[in-house]
Length: 319
Image 1 (cartoon, rainbow, N blue to C red):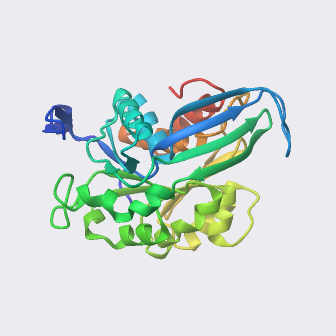
Image 2: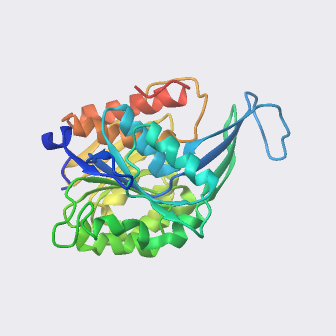
Image 3: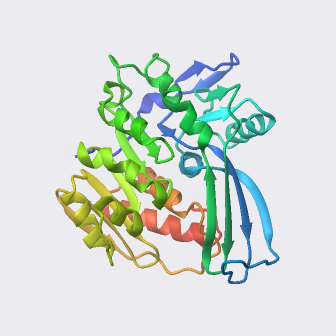
């Protein structure tokens, strides 16, 4: 079974030179995947297809890997980002914002040719109306974002990185497949989430090789299992039958199930008034990783993650 992540005591004082010559802390966890600008339009009224409503439009650092990293930082961990960001003004601003949030940016791949990625969503009082993720630069960069795990900066095939790694499904299927078999990840505690239901099937290599901990919602579980589920326990059992080593399945405000070969644990999330939805799944995943890093048992870790996610969707910081 995948071991819970831990924060080595040596990380409390370790530092290495960064690209600009300043000291940089060693990471407690690597967050690999999309780091981009979230452009979110929110309306306090219910919206339908074709609605044209007043509201607020915000631009914030986002992306699955970024959202997970930001939440982990709030819980006291030091995440390092592995992603692709353009050497354009938007990219420079994004890297500065990441560093300001306490995230380690030394290992980012900065491309001269690729623009900084973006995500755009519209949310109403009735939830997410529509969203488009433009992560083409991350996909084009491919394995280049993993160089620090091979060239010795964070690890190598002979001395693999041995800490927790959060992966997101914005990486291409071929790259995710390579990661499941790459010796550089042999000792890593892989935590994996699809970026969206549309990219859920990219997680199939983790089922085929029975590795990693998968964080999916009910729809994503159905896509991976080529079935439809009405509750999280049924979906979690089906995921295990398909080869998953460990899985956490969420079903909105109804339930969440954590499952491995030792059994299933299902809990209901706290009831809250929903103020936002984009990033809720990433918050759940990060809070669960942080809870296990604190040494919490399975039931307590799941409860902590559900509480953090519920707090997040209510509009408050997930602490």
